[in-house]
Image 1 (cartoon, rainbow, N blue to C red):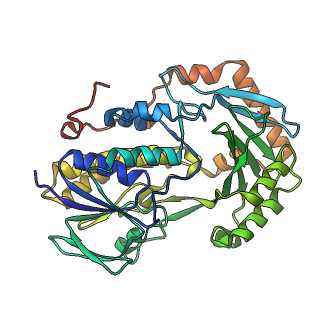
Image 2: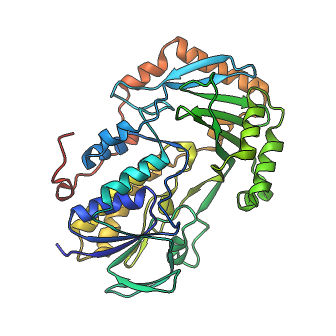
Length: 412
């Protein structure tokens, strides 16, 4: 096996996950992250299905378990805060998760766990990113944002859904990889109050709006506003000034009922605010020469699927396995990576327009129907039945085995 000198652009979750497997196999890995420090922030995320298996193979599952957000389930509520239906998390260890995963964790905690697992074996460089690169059949030469240069055997673009590395390797006639779903979301932290519970609460508002509240610590919770609107003029809103974004969300949800005014008040003072358009990334080109894309840069599934973190962990493992098996033929490694992973990605990216209309209904009547059917499912104990007996793997896709990467793994 040829030992490679590998540069990963992006220090979130997927980049360090890839580095974990690569250094275990004996490769040298450098991660550059544009933020000046470890960006251990973000909202609550969940790890599902194959992602749980991989964390166990990495020896990190118990560490993740110790940092879990103890969310018991989720509840649909009305304007008075009355629960219409509550679906509990599946903690059976069998079958798929409900909307609340058995492994809910704050993004920042997962980032820290992956960083701690790799910081002694991976070179981390904060405060700069890849500005430009050139490659030939032997190497990739990179120019960084600080003017420095470096030469590597390969470059990995783990730089998110707005990836500049993806833009650089796409064919000139390739279609736009961004698929707009016609939805927007914003989240921020709010002070916890005595009536907050360890239950995720969903409040639908006429006009294709939804509010979600979650509690992740003794002192803080999260508010999330979601909106369905496919007008093109809104697409620039996530790039507007912070004040403009906050004003937009305040005005669109003002007077919506339940605890909306509390959440809007918290929005004005929060230091943890994030706003984005919900999109998917679809591209036929995951690699070119010695450059390859990973996770959201290649195949963002959108927050609506709840599979973003899991798909990043899976992609990192498959890519590492193929690099290790074909270190002297990287184009072949990348072709195998594409061939093995893409069926899984195609499956989790299945998201039809009617699904969004169901998630964010337009009318009060439609909201009432959702509440009724949710109550009926709970009454008939169907969520528990489905969770216990439906096979866990989505679409029957099986996680590949790469024994050289797993020389210290325990039996699954």
